[in-house]
Length: 317
Image (cartoon, rainbow, N blue to C red; front, side, top):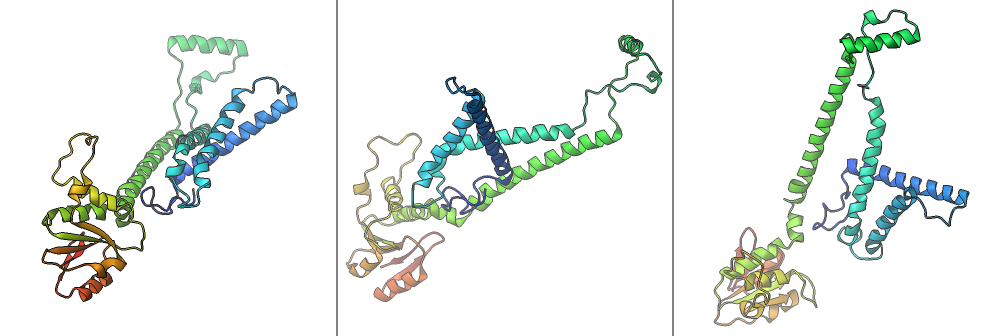
């Protein structure tokens, strides 16, 4: 409700996981389940019927509370990247069950303030003084002959009903647009989201596929070693599936990484000086755009030229 996953693959970094109305419903439902579980547990202990099977009024909320905390354990027990939505994904169903319970509880309370449409309203002419029995008989007779006047909501009641419908509709439209804006605009079009999903590696792989096959290609990993980061596999996959059109599931054997990635070298920053200039054409591609690194490469290899596109930065030797 207050802050969430900082990984852009899972969330708008640091923002609450639940939309604030859902968060309120969740808290209400969670508190109600704890209250009901404790209430029936105390009643069971006081009546000393521990030998009997606990009622569903205790079992159901207790099960949901246990489900919630057990599914949060993978997130609690990890020390990296917490809070982590993916590790706590098992808690999603019960979180929205709590939210549904809270919404139903709040609706049942607000419903008491709505106009009651089951009240009988009588015409002014029916208000003559009758004895209780005679009045009831008269009402039944008039109901059968058409003189009974059903409920006619007052002007204030009609205005209140229209206001509630209008306000509810406006809130639903506002909530829908807010979530649309969060997902498709704030998150979907954010450059950090693209980076988190290694979109730059897709662009690099596609660019490498446009270069001559016999040219030497060096992809600079803009971070310290000694291990090659996982996003490199995206580039290798794009290189290995060059010219393929995937209309169905990939073949079981997978692409031939070795053949497709020949003449492609993945090196760290400290290995740039080890690049040997030969008669073959060569290209240096940066995984991350860095003007200072480009200037350093130009100083080492002054005979080349800088390559800059909207998605790929590199150097042509």
